[in-house]
Image 1 (tube, each protein chain N blue to C red):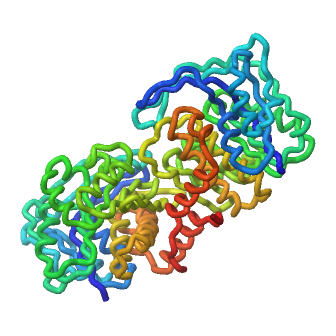
Image 2 (image 1 turned 60 degrees about the vertical axis):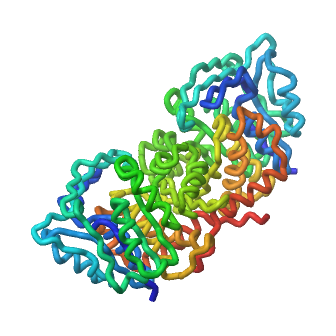
Image 3 (image 1 turned 90 degrees about the vertical axis):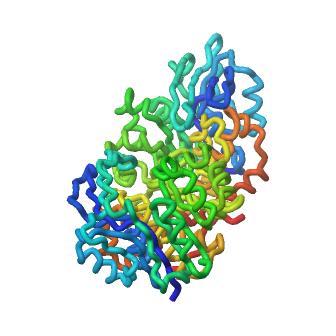
Amino acid sequence: MNKLLIVGTVAFDAIETPFGKTDKILGGAATYIGLSASFFNLQSAIVSVVGDDFPQEYLDLLTDRNIDISGIEVVKGGKTFFWSGLYHNDLNSRDTLVTELNVLADFQPKVPQDFKNADVVMLGNLHPLVQSSVLDQMETKPKLVVLDTMNFWMDCALAELLEVIKRVDVITINDEEARQLSGEYSLVKAAALIQAMGPKYVVIKKGEHGALLFHNKEVFFAPALPLEEVFDPTGAGDTFAGGFSGFITQSENVSFENMKNAIIHGSNLASFCVEKFGTERMVGLEKKEVLSRLQQFKSLTQFDIEL
Amino acid sequence: MNKLLIVGTVAFDAIETPFGKTDKILGGAATYIGLSASFFNLQSAIVSVVGDDFPQEYLDLLTDRNIDISGIEVVKGGKTFFWSGLYHNDLNSRDTLVTELNVLADFQPKVPQDFKNADVVMLGNLHPLVQSSVLDQMETKPKLVVLDTMNFWMDCALAELLEVIKRVDVITINDEEARQLSGEYSLVKAAALIQAMGPKYVVIKKGEHGALLFHNKEVFFAPALPLEEVFDPTGAGDTFAGGFSGFITQSENVSFENMKNAIIHGSNLASFCVEKFGTERMVGLEKKEVLSRLQQFKSLTQFDIEL
């Protein structure tokens, strides 16, 4: 089985949406990526850090999905990273209420020996120096390195971010972040400029408006599935990234054509994530549901104009 | 050849975008619909009204596209409908600066005898009583009636709008209008409620985010083509409606499957419209360009996951 190495936060989230609010629940980019990628046939490991306040049952939930957690450092006496956010009525925007870095502040990632030859590396949203450090530890060149990031790092660690962006094959960011990183409003122009920074493939996530994949002059678009109700968007982007990198790992095919399929798999998995609070839907999700909704994605976009 | 009857404004527009501004130029919903539909194999006629200030060259431009203009009343001493708008930097929102109804205020539409048996009727954005009056004049039941409208009529003529909505097969409106008309934020729920008002097919236009087609429990999505530069969005929705209704007229097939193709044709034509000011791009557009970009739409959305 091919190996997927995942780096990112494993954390506590407290979420408030127009539909309700949660106490501290399981969250973090690597958590969502790992759960999502677990729907593919692969071996995965998470590199992250938590405090000893982090419940064993949350770690068990990851190992139950065959995720290797030997790279998740547990800091004695440390507190786990905590994020709290409030979503506005349209669910397209949110305010961050609390960010407590805690053990994340001094995080030195350690890649498990078994995963230093991973086929695919998924660098979830974290400080760019942490992302770089993981790449430095690889003993063989991965077939594909995917990086997710956010505006926060553009604001406070741009030089380091540009350094790690140079080293990756695929970058996934949202539309506003693509505009900020490139200085271009047009996403077509933004994607071209970001390709010039290093990544040959640029994925622009537009939330409920779908995702675009750019490569040279080519572009592919995957819609988000129109849902009756979006309950909580937290983790949707990470779930997308997990589906994308998970499918690529399983299929061992890094062509543009196959990345189209990976984008669809990512969008499909993300469409479940938003249906319940936090990781709840992904934890309860069954493979047959995933396959069935993939059929809906096909019906949603496929047409038969003869050319 | 099948017949398409088009009702809507033929007008003067003055447009300002971040890229420049125009004096009074050719505009109007029926103008855009007619130009767009002229790329299909059909007979079309426009029912509208202008003043005698309306240049003959603009009328010639329509007849050059084989559009029957005998239903465009020219009011002696009257002034043509005039709209002026200013687009904001993101081009997704605009302010209306001037609306002079002029001859439109007392418009009594007269359907040319030859088109009282039209196969498809495209009711462009106009007062719902004018739209109803056109349907009243039909001598045979059209295979398909498509209605476009906007929030203005929901605000000031809702009862009349709901009456005409009952009588149509397809409604095309934008996302905000769908929310206003239904009172539901979720577009899936909004589309279900609007279907209950009469139209069996609901098309929700999302501008740069594409278009959704709803029918019973089924849904189809067509993206907008990602463009380097959107120059002027004026008329894009009408061009979409013209492509949609034009293709249906040509193909004589009102199935859901064929409507998917119609949505793609509409999106394809609309992608040209926004590339220049007003009707300029549509007037200069050649059929081979249309076909070539249709291939781009296929590449943009088609994938080959086996299920």
